[in-house]
Length: 241
Ligand code: HEC
Ligand code: HEC
Ligand code: HEC
Ligand code: HEC
Ligand code: HEC
Image (cartoon, rainbow, N blue to C red; front, top):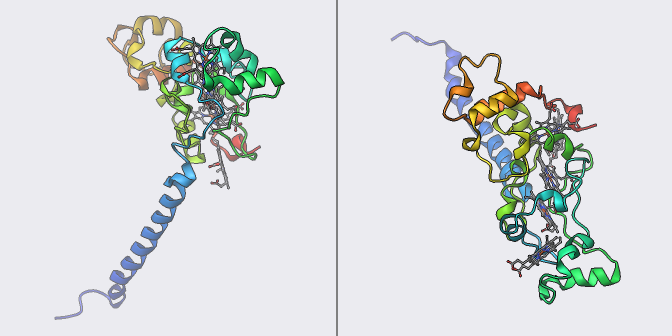
């Protein structure tokens, strides 16, 4: 039989094998780099001087994040509360609880409690809390369900890919601005008629959102994105200034 294929095609299987090996190696390296716990540190939960229970203070006592993290809406950095803030209550409540001893010591000496910082962005990245919190991005999207944590642990990777995931598709995360501090909020909580009266609906919606039973995250997100003209930076200078 005549040689039907030209001679060079003999090399195709070998080329495929080589390409395959390179692809697998690349993928392994990438997964290793981006997904291993060392890189993402998911679950990192340092031992704090006081095991401060967010679940008790937020979910049980109904405290707002801003009672303690009072700069989060106004500044780039959120703050961790000072001893005075704790002592507003703990001069009366749980006066003898040994867990609160470091707070009482700080109160006496004037030296701050040495909380261990969990979330920390590297110096060459610009990040601003107020820009996010005032634009319908909840603490929940970046820190997880802090209101149900007995002590805070790192819940999201805060890697570059993670930031960009939202910057490319903010509609998957945007919520009404009065629900930013309600970490248990769900799209089902939205009343469509009220929502549309306040925020309108996308110009290309195709149906009347106010007549719907429920709105999905996508519908809510698209509306808010258009209403606030949301356009998060995806260019390098946006975050590396
Ligand atoms: C009664 C005061 C108080 C309230 C209310 C409070 N926090 Fe905190 N928060 C603290 C203290 C103290 C720390 C530092 C100790 C720690 O990390 O557990 C902290 C730490 C954190 C951290 C980790 C910061 C870091 O990187 O080290 C996050 C995230 C956080 N809080 C989010 C929230 C959110 C979200 C809410 C509202 C749902 C909230 N907090 C309500 C007192 C409070
Ligand atoms: C608005 C009042 C209020 C403020 C402010 C407050 N707490 Fe509390 N805290 C309470 C109450 C009330 C309890 C008791 C809850 C219970 O018994 O279920 C409590 C309990 C505690 C406990 C004991 C939990 C346990 O399991 O034994 C710790 C620790 C604690 N608070 C730390 C702090 C620290 C640290 C701060 C400051 C960052 C702070 N609290 C600020 C009201 C407050
Ligand atoms: C878009 C993501 C995002 C949202 C939304 C967000 N945070 Fe953060 N948070 C971060 C990043 C990133 C850091 C690390 C900042 C740094 O290193 O300067 C951080 C750090 C913190 C810290 C440690 C102190 C600091 O500023 O470094 C606290 C406390 C905190 N956040 C509380 C909150 C609370 C409370 C909310 C909701 C009102 C919230 N964050 C919403 C991303 C977010
Ligand atoms: C869950 C969604 C979400 C995540 C996660 C997120 N962002 Fe954003 N980011 C936004 C939105 C929404 C805006 C506001 C855009 C607007 O106002 O048009 C924004 C705006 C910004 C801006 C411009 C604000 C200004 O002051 O100029 C910077 C810078 C930024 N983000 C950095 C970051 C970095 C760094 C991270 C990761 C550590 C991050 N963001 C994670 C949603 C997010
Ligand atoms: C939305 C914000 C954002 C944008 C846009 C962004 N970066 Fe980053 N970049 C980050 C964050 C956050 C980190 C830190 C990651 C970490 O600490 O894990 C980072 C880290 C890096 C690093 C250090 C290597 C690494 O992975 O830790 C390089 C290099 C880098 N970025 C280059 C770029 C370039 C080039 C662009 C434009 C194509 C860009 N970045 C756009 C947020 C951003």
